[in-house]
Each structure stands twice: as structure tokens, then as C-alpha cells.
Amino acid sequence: MRRRLTVVQLLPALESGGVERSTLEIAAALAAAGHRALVVSAGGRLEPALRQAGAEHITLDIGRKSPLVLRHVPVLRRLLLECGADIVHARSRLPAWLGRLALRGLPPARRPHWVTTVHGLNSPGRYSAVMASGERVICVSRTVHDYVRRHYPQVDPARLRVVPRGIDPAQFPRRPHPDPEARARVLAGHPALAGDGPLLLLPGRGTRLKGHADALRLLAALRAGGFPQARLWLPGAREPGREAYLRELEAQARALGVDGAVLFTPPTAHIAEAYAACDLVLQLSRKPEAFGRTVAEALSVGRPVLGWAHGGVGELLAGLQPAGAVPPFDEDALARAAAALLRDPPPPVAVPYTLQAMQQATLDVYAELAG
Image (cartoon, rainbow, N blue to C red; front, side):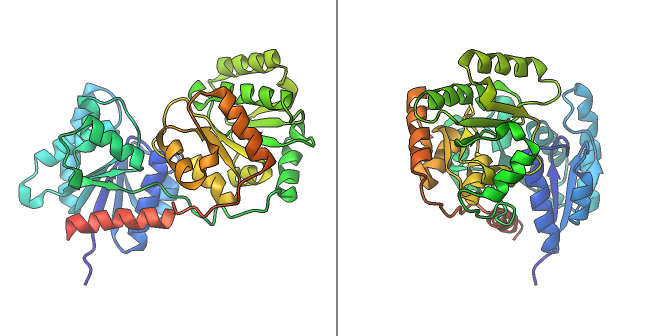
């Protein structure tokens, strides 16, 4: 008979983001499989969703960067003993350090197994090295696996497990291209996007790392070179606290003569609909990303993706849609590739990176350790 496991996940908070989403997804999979799932964090707006999935939350501010955070180590150690934890899974650096200290003070016979996930390409060094300390180190892409091998050569490769992030195909179903219904719904909320030309989409928060300036220059190049009616939607570029950056982008759009063809909005709650309404999805992060969820989501919906070929984005594009992979920061090549994808979109591809596959592979790692 399969043994019921108790798995404790550690992260700073439960507000939003990829780490938080993965935590919820694994907690839900554990609960659905009959295991006990606990999450330790400072809490946040995702707590109700976590509990609804059948998991438990323990509020402990283990992500606050202050020497006072060390006072949580004995509390965490006591918690692990009382709940009879089989696995402790750390997803962020400071919680991982606290988790290691807590485990160190436990008798070996009662010490849970230690798992870490490297979610990002953090600056290598002693502080980040804790994320490669697990008995099993989950890497969210082959890019991350290679990063760990390169920067932490002392880590036994046998401890590494590549478990790509996954999307739920039910949330990103294949849609016809073009999709007049999706376009009509988007235009109803954003009439400034109306027009006869192609619609480009770059979803991403308001930071220059997301490549908004590259997208504006691409739009100008397309409008000057065969697509005079092209438009660009940037959901997420407009957000509280980023007003100065937005003014900078608006000034750049005016200088390029495309201010009437670009729309900056807050993030959309209907991103699958946004993908379906557009003709080309852009992923132009200036810094290599660990995975590149946008690529998988858009390709699942059936839209071509154009991105800089580095990090996880380059890895996904190389494997799923090579025509959209462009040498980083080569703007001429970017414009040529965009024009080619708009004139002759590649056929839709099957995206193997599913939520269910990611959940099962992670549970398999737990089972491997816990026997």
C-alpha cells in the first residue's frame, strides 16, 4: 500500500508569480493524491486558493531579509517534528537557508528529505548555492540544469532532475487563426486596437527587462516595411509604481511615430483570449529567463511566437518553433523574422509541457526519495 507523505514547501510569500503558482500546483497534486501538503510562508492573496486545493498554510515570515529572521529556525524545526515531515521542499534562497538550519538541528532518524527547485538564473555565489544543495535539485528547464552544472560543478549530476514548468491545456486551448470572436471581445474592451493590420502582443510587467522598447522599435520597422497598419498591445506595462517607466515608453513611441498604434494597459485577466485575438506574440526579455511560460501558453493557443534565442525562451523556441528564435538583440533579424511569421504563420504545434506532466514528475521525485 502506498504510504501517505507529508510534504512541506517553503517560500517567502503567496502573493503572485511563477514560484507561487508552482507551489500551489504541487500542493494541489499532493492533496489530490491523498498526501498531506503544507506550505510555510508569510501568506498573501493566494492563501484561499491554497486551502481550497486541500493544502494547509502555516504563516511564518521566512522571506524577510533581516537578521531577525533567524528566530524562525527553532519554530520551523519544531513544526517539522510535530507534523512528521517526510519531505521539505525549498523554492527560494532565504527560506532554503532557514530550512537547512532547521534540518541540521534534527536527529538523523527524524530528519526529512531535502528538495530544492532552481526557479531562476540567480547570480551565482555562496548565497545562491543553497538552491543546489538538495538531495534532489529540480531544474525548471534544461537551461537551468546547464546553469547549475556550469556554476556549481561540485553538485553531483545524479541529484539533478529536469522538470519543466507546465501549462494547463484546458486553460490555453487551441483556437482558430484568425479568431474573429476573440478579436471582437478584445476590441470591445480596447477600441484603440481596432484596425485592419496585424496585432502584436507582448505581455509583461512594467520593467525594461521585458523588452518593451525592443517591441516598439519592431513595430516601427514593420509599419515602415510592409505592414503599415500593424499595432502593438502591451498588457502589464501600465502598473502602479511604474509611471516614470511608462512615460519613457510613451515618449519613445512618439519619437518613433507609432504612438497611435500602440496601447499600454494593466495586465489582462484573460490572457488566453489575448493570445487568440493577436497574430504574433513577442517574448523579448532582455535577461535570459529560466523557462518562458509565455512561449508555451501562446503556442498552445496556436499563435506564432517571436523571441530572443537565449535562456528558457530560446530553448522552447528551438524545440517547438525554430522560425521564431532570433539571435539576442539583432533588431534587423527580429524585423525579418516578424515579417516572415506574419506573412506565412507556421502550423500549430503540440506543446508537451503540461501542468499534469510537471505535477506527476515532481511527485515522482518525492516518491523516489521517500521510498
